[in-house]
Image (cartoon, rainbow, N blue to C red; front, top):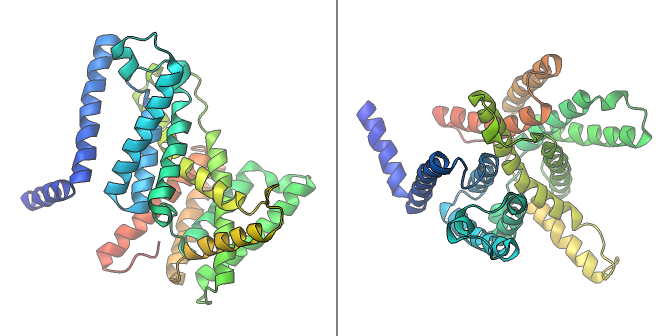
Length: 343
């Protein structure tokens, strides 16, 4: 049995040349980075930035499900971002330093440049592949998370009228998504549009809030505790995942706003019509099993409840862990039973 498992893993590893290329390049980088660290005490790329990029690659691969797209977009984005950094870093660096160790003042702006380029080229190469599909199960999970997020932040006790109005509107949207998750009500285009916009709002809030999760003044490499290094690295990994949603949901919401050069004219309404079609297109017609919805509320709600009372990890960290792991758990469960994955 172990031999069969080993053979199957080997076959899968070599079956996709781009996957093989990516993993090989990653191993080469790790080995060379260890060598640089031993000889000079530094890293080619800080661990936090490496974890950030890993999060971007992981999520884009999960969305597109195509290594070819990930590799091409990644290579193009890296070279253009490097060319931009090289032009502003100056020519006073020696070749080795210029090739591998970009100054700290410059490396800080590299991630946002890379991320923006990565997403722009993703839209150019394969627009609808980079826009993740939504289901009733996903919006249910997001609605549970945003309710927990509001409670944990203490917004319920706020006297601010704007916050209260936002919570009432959010509660209505959440109840609407819960209603769809527990019934077989037809998903009309209007319902898809409402649920998609609600999902964009939630993910935008979480993605922006997740930025505050990264609050480590010193580099991760300076932390002596290995567990703390892994924990901080995982936070940056989640930030890399959320960065895709920061850009994607910002675009899908900002396009509703009129521009000075097309202020409620025919061009604006045509653009809004296309945007509505994008929102509708990305929402699946598949109905979620009420049993799966119940398990989602019971399992995820229970975890959020325990964390609210005991404050084990930051709320942002737990929410993004739920977004990443719960669909994988459901997928594994359904694959074991030979059922179709609802997420």
